[in-house]
Length: 180
Image 1 (tube, rainbow, N blue to C red):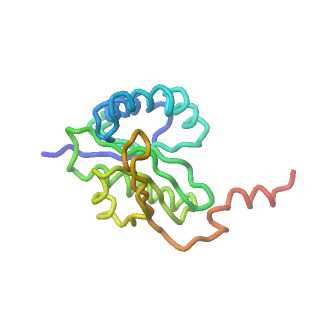
Image 2 (cartoon, one colour; image 1 turned 90 degrees about the horizontal axis):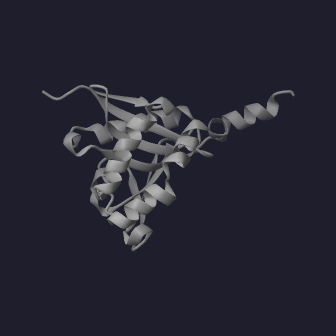
């Protein structure tokens, strides 16, 4: 019997559990990066301290999938910015793949992005996940061959609804109407 999977928006109290799986997924080669590039990512490009700082400040949003209180999947995104939410990293522990966890994380992100005023999702992926995103309603916008770490990356987007400045600039517009 499959374990019940719970998806939630994380806070910094969940960071260490996330980071352990993040490190493991990066070093396993899933993202098609060499061991040297994976180490560079962890040490320089997305170091632990910066990730924690960005999560604490609300610049990044982390969604986690749990099975029996163990983190088995994650989706790290940016906060929506003028209507577009950007997904950075999505991975599921190899022992929990093919159970709909990645799709559930995407659904949770989509709903959260809508609540935050977004009208579009955007992400880059590698060739191993092109069909996964196409099958979930994302449209391929292009390929950047031989890009980060010498790996080709595909740009995808998903339109969620018609753009509306009143939604995606809601916080900003409200701050402009408040009196000091």
